Amino acid sequence: MDKYLHSVTLVADKCHGCTHCLNYCPTEAIRIKDGKATINSDRCIDCGQCIRVCRNKAKKSIYDPFEALKKYKFKVALPAPTLYGQFDNLDDVDYVVQGLYDIGFDYVYEVSRAAEIVTEYTRRFLKQSNLPRPVISSACPVILRLISLRFPSLSSHVMPLMSPMEVAAINAKELVIQEHPDLTADDIGIAFISPCPAKVSYVKNHPENRQPIIDCVLSMKEIYFMMISKMKRGEQPQNTSSSGVVGLSWATSGGESTAIFNDKYLAADGIENVIKVLDQIENNALPTLEFVELNSCPGGCVGGVMTVANPFIARARLQGLRRYLPVTRTSKAKELTKDGVPENLIIHTPLGQRSIGSFSNDTNLSIAVMAQIEEVSKLLPQIDCGACGAPTCHAFAEDVVCKNVSMDECPLHKLPKFSRED
Amino acid sequence: MGEILKLHFDVDGDDFTSAGEASAEVKKKLRLLGYSPETVRRVSIAMYEGEINMVIHAGGGVADVEISEDCIKIVLEDHGPGIENIELAMSEGYSTAADAVRSLGFGAGMGIPNMKRYTDSFNLESTVGVGTKVTLVINT
Image 1 (cartoon, chains in turn cyan, yellow):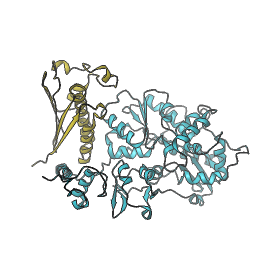
Image 2 (cartoon, chains in turn purple, green; image 1 turned 90 degrees about the horizontal axis):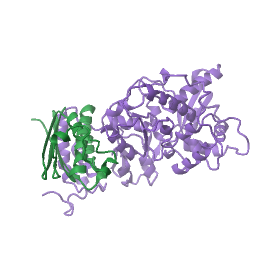
Image 3 (tube, rainbow over the protein chains, first blue to last red; image 1 turned 30 degrees about the vertical axis):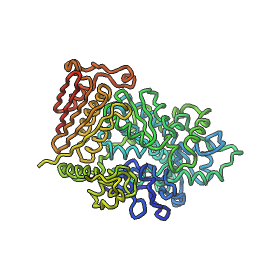
Image 4 (cartoon, one colour; image 1 turned 180 degrees about the vertical axis):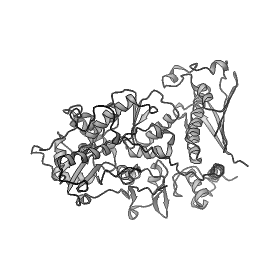
């Protein structure tokens, strides 16, 4: 497996070695070793749960600083629709667009605009393609990684269409080059303003055979604080938004699917819910669904760990902002083709299948190892206290068998109260 | 000698909301063992249907799974009411599920046919008033 660059990392000084994050990691990727949390890179899906729940703020996201854009002559901002929900007392999205120009961007292409285009292409896809149903949205990168790790049989259900972030990047670059023929491709720096670390990883590990189309991924939090000091609400913004209700709705769970005008959809958010839904799809238990929208963060992208506002507050603000917007603004968009889906926006490389933790290529050997794990597990207290540094007794049994961890790391199994040895 | 991993599950009949947990657990293990997605899918669908049936019709039961390199064998056993007419129960669309169960989307009469469809060997023994035993084998 190639080295995967993660964007969730540990600040060792701040980690107290408490076991809080262990229980929240959906892939059991965290162990406490020598009093500090460690993240297993093969298992981590960059969902950001550990950042969200850490009481000591010892987990943080990695992203590009705004200064990384300095080397580009022409700076393009791609704000995720979640950004609009961060500001208090805002009655018009145009102020946000103008704010981005005011902090130094030369051009703004809203991801919400690209989202409306993706919505239209999704409708076309659902009409014409014979992808296995239900079709699963490709927008949330955590979901893509989760599917390739834990639900490889569903890889073929994922819509082979780029996410709004990528579509925005491609369209923005084309438009800028058209409008500014004096610029070369290298002069243009394209920055996505992200609500979550998963998008950072997605961009940094850009899929094989595909050119990187986004140069920097910035933190929404950082941009927010730069913007609030520059945004002048009294003055009329000169630059205006070019997205509508549909585009803004993508920031919250259910927004993407309601917009495809097909009521046979399911929208789930929060990683635990998502895993349950994927299990059900894999069991053929949801045969009537056409489309499934899955968001790793609670509430959708507004729940990302690089945002400022509480997801529910952001959602309410977005509802207010949407009120007087047109449904979509794609009818006049030059970027939208008349019919079909443009070839350059289709993902041809299928999702990889990388099973986590498979013990050996020899199935017989793997079975023996797993049988051994089950035996060791039976000797443990089964109270999942985390004192050993593993999230569950079963995970600890795995470490004992596969990683030569000593049984004595479990401080309880020898106590008469917990002893299971006959 | 081929290695065998034996797993045992008590399928709780009182709690409908947790139905399907045993098959989800088996699926997770098969995936870790590196079985093909297709095999994993067949096992999880067939076992899921059997597990749901035990919860809906028999108030729960037990599931014993034996995993080896060549095949996965699942034995589901309950002490429920038994099946009166096995042939009828095997036909698609036939169901005796209660309305409350149907309102949750179950009881479409595809449980047993699906178990048969996704397995290489399917055996159903049932005695009215005693219980039902389903044996499913999926070759890898």
